[in-house]
Image (tube, rainbow, N blue to C red):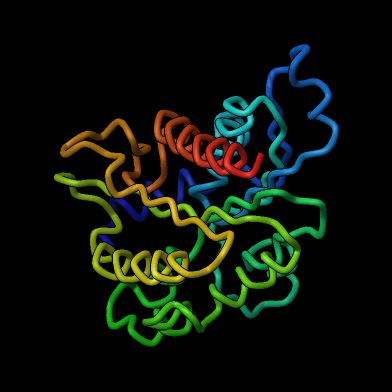
Amino acid sequence: MKPIYFALALVTFVLAGCAETARAPETSDTVSRNASPRILAMGDSLMAWHGLTGQSIAHSVARELGEPVRNNAVRGAHVLYNLPISGAMGMKIARQFDEGDWDWVVLTGGGNDLWLGCGCRKCERKLDKLISRDGRKGAIPGMLAKIRQSGARIIYVGYLRSPGIDSGVDECRSEGDVLEGRIARLADYADGLYFLSLQDLVPHGDRSYHGIDMIHPSVKASREIGQRVAELIRQEDAARD
């Protein structure tokens, strides 16, 4: 990773938020839903970023739907994580799941396992541990299966791209594509699981969707990702009604 991007990532790392309930502005239509969130957000810094300023993806979903969203995402979190204490505090994404009457779980994960776990080079073994080629085995399918057993539907959000722009995670592009392809394959046959790709979100050469480190989402990106998540929830909820 290039030194300038690494330094910027370390500086901005401490500014992201975690573990919060993102609430919609209270109006006569939304007050009744604000007491008990039915949507849980989990994952890494993509989901946690801008939490302290009330502009995370979870906050965007809450505003769009007019209801609260519980955000347990933790910056730097991994899918594969063996340390027990920090894992229980949310560094292991599966441990972010709280038992509850959730209708939806919106999550991200896997990027840190590739970027920090194997440097996005020779990551075949790491990818297979996360999720097998057919999408049926690995830590990610295991985590999702446990969430689905609670009855919650799941939206797995993919990662931002930076087409036409150099970034600190350029080495991860091909591995990231493989990871997301496997998750999408799982979603094709797993009931109640939806993969939301962000590959088409960022226009070529547009820097406005990333923070200064060119890794984490800008406020604009968090807002638009949240809008996409909210729209998918609306569509699927309407289909069930």
